Length: 83
View 1 (tube, rainbow, N blue to C red):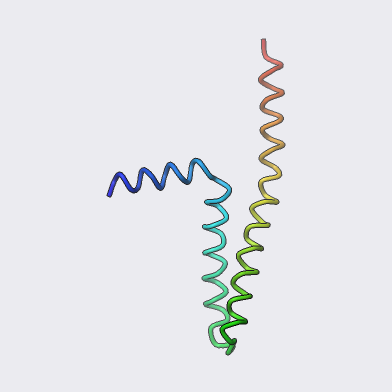
View 2 (view 1 turned 30 degrees about the vertical axis):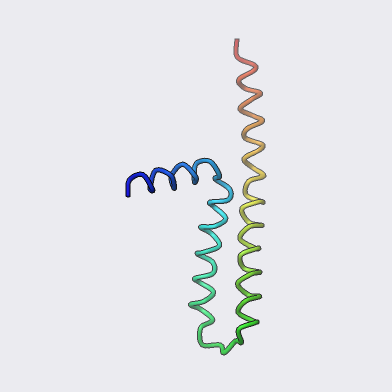
């Protein structure tokens, strides 16, 4: 069991954006399922809603990651300025 947890931890550290997308998408999909459970949607409508919600979560992580690249550039510039 510990070995499996180490692999999962390594994967999350290796792919932080993908793992953040998965976590955010699952959370958003659960909220969608909970809030729209009594609406009476058909299977195809549920499929498309969940797919679009998952893609929106991916877009959110992509937009948030734009700031990561700027911080990395600033860190590289600060490191090169030091003697």
